[in-house]
Length: 140
Image 1 (cartoon, rainbow, N blue to C red):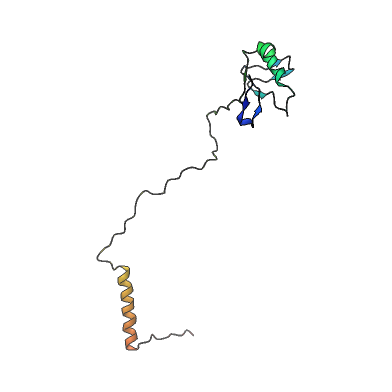
Image 2 (cartoon, rainbow, N blue to C red):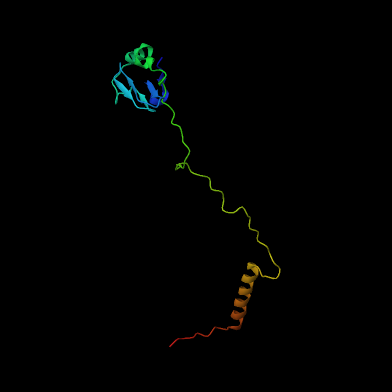
């Protein structure tokens, strides 16, 4: 009846879930289960029950008599996600800022960079041939 739970590092588990709106008392185990809660009765940190004791209670004891208010399973119950606003720890995909591609148009009226550089070289060569030096101005 009790299987090994692979998520709990191969330890035996005996989960009980109270599905009623009231607290349920298990007399033979001397345990009170609050309304809507789940417990692992083979958890060593909180309980001191053995497998035989729990199986007897499930077959003919207080767990059997209150089976309409209590559900028994081997795996931990899944936590339902209620609607609301939650903080995600997953990275989100951010698309590129703009899907527009920029095109560089060449206009015949405007000089391109190669022409500007060649004009500067021509001006430097022209001034170098004449031996012209720019006057140096000193501030007083």
